[in-house]
Length: 124
Length: 111
Image: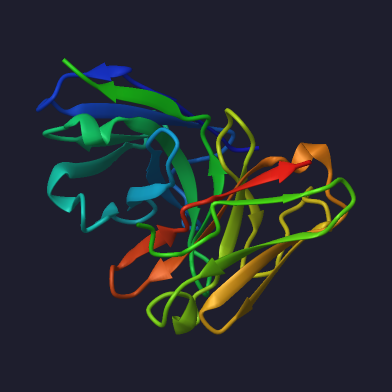
């Protein structure tokens, strides 16, 4: 079965770029059935969708408008990985970051497989 | 302030039935977009619990059910068990924001 695992630094300095990688195992990231998303959760708070990528034909990316100016999601199909870059971070970006399989159902997409999450703290 | 509104907490005794509401608007639930529900056990990642308003993924007990009407949706849990103690989130799509949106989450306490 498909599993996702996040990796990356747990501490990022303010104004720097947060970079995370998600490794997909048990299936190919180059799928025509799914997208691949990043979602974050600040401590004690709710979930926020960050962005997604589609990798089957051409690479297509979609971002939360509130974060669009700072976010880049990319893919390395040779490694079965996708990545998140979030630039100019502040303390407000401190959160658990999840990589997620994004299921584009008719009627509205759902997030059906989640990584375990990785905590990223923005502090000097 | 979440786009979808959930009660912060609900509680119930073992064996009882509880419901969790999720209230949206005409730009999301009311625009005929599906509602999905996630269960987040303490210290773990969210897990898809209900998809497409009222469908359970394989392995989810039939004690969990969902419904949708107008601009709102509900998650019902019958035969409450201690292991159901978790945070529950609803999710849909918002046409005005052009993004997937979540509720603020509801903490279920089993008394």
